[in-house]
Length: 136
Image (cartoon, rainbow, N blue to C red):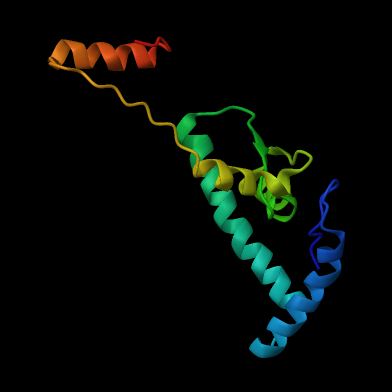
């Protein structure tokens, strides 16, 4: 079975349960847990590696380093980096990054301005001041 753990993961209990989850799913599908786990990682790795390769080509990057974030990073990033022949890194606490992003995505800042007689110039001035970080 592929190594689903990355140094620094806090999912020690989850690691023990992963083979059992694949055993249950494999028995329903009529395949061994190892075959199912390998197929799962291969399929996910193929998609991630293709996206990484496309991004590298599109941005014309030389010697990029893939930085993995989110719960699957410990399993997918080393495998995808191997396929795409790139260096990789999974920072500490990577598994909680997507949760933090989800929480922050709900935070919005709105600024409301009232202009008595708005003209194109006054509206543009308000937006320009906001972009420049100046309050008006």
